[in-house]
View (cartoon, helix red, strand yellow):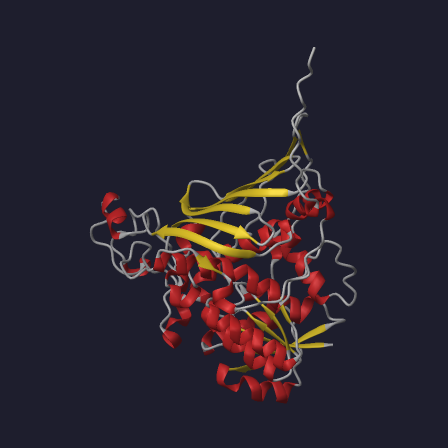
Amino acid sequence: MKRAILIGVGGRSVMWRDAAAFGYPQTSTLVGLCDINPGRLELALRQLKEKGASTPISLFPPEELEKQIRMLNANLVIVTSRDSTHDEFIVRALDAGCDVITEKPMTITAEKCRRILEAVRRSGRSVRVTFNYRYSPPRRQVKELLQSGVIGRVLSVEFKWVLDTSHGADYFRRWHRNKANSGGLLVHKATHHFDLVNWWINSVPETVAAFGDRVFYRPEQAARYGLTRRTERCADCPESGRCPFFLDIKGNPRLRELYYNQEKYDGYHRDRCVFSASIDIEDTMNVIVAYRSGVKMTYTLTAFSPWEGYHIVFNGAKGRLEHLMRESSYVNADGRTPGEMIRDATTINVMPHFGHGYYVPVEEGKGGHGGGDQRLLDDLFLPDPGPDPLGMRADHRAGAWSILTGIAANTSIAEKRIVSVRELVGDLDLPDYLPTPAWDEPIRLATPAKPSVS
């Protein structure tokens, strides 16, 4: 039986909180909640009781973690706190004898990553990183197609991900707006994307070059909208009636209850101005990655698009695979489903060389992250989740490799140079990606036929 403690009870934690408390009674029970904000802890407990929780659940601050692990006989810690704190709680939980489930990104810097890797070796305990995108049906279909060798060995990847002006802007309101908290979007958000590529092509990054800047969410952009009297947060801004980025934290019941009413405890403002000069993360990024397998990838991330989703292309020795996915936009805790797949707006197209291309019928994924959330929870909490033929389960190694592309990209942007991933963490064990015989075949150049002599 998993006796779980949840660390961090903000908006993203609800999925994990309810899964541990109610979703899998045959395998897990929630015994403790940990957060720096006592008001938010009391709110979480009240919500659990309203949903029928009857077993005792301890509420405590982070400094009591090891004590509570012992007192509650906990053996699992779920980390959903601010990204910059992940390493602290993961290491402390491992050293206290617990296994860990952590939200992505596993952590945000190379130094913090090394701390986690050393703690895993030292403790012998496990870390699972929650890459729910791997579990969604369309992403699984892409993996199966590539694994089958339908386009042969993958030679290059073109990847474009866009966040719209609802979801994208939200990163510039919250704590994510500062790299010290989140690592920027190249770590916090793109860890999903870089993990997918690592998993899809069965490889890991070697060298990274990147450019990035904040070109849209700037004070100058506010001036273009005529917002000359704006303040540092939406709640008291005189421009709220005219600003297209206004977030009504008081008028939204969930946001008001979860954040606005809890500000008195920790001073955290969930609705800061997206045009603030204090923001230090980029909103447009361009990255080139060279992988150990020889694959090269070009990647772009834009946080101010009119639509939300991505387009990825795999160029192979036998053809080309294109995958387009449009997702529903959302603002965390506003009641909408995060990243839900938009039906009939997602395609998978296979184009063999010297043949006719065709569209593959796309399996519809319902729920968060393209249908991946529930499948991930089942894999983590069911008593017998079954085999994992596509290698969707991710441990600390996959978690590390997913963030190292973004960390290297941040270094490249800051230092204006190409960065070797090895310089960040040294030699790191490879994840258990699947072998792909079709990709391992050497590429043989065709010998031109000799012209016949008449």
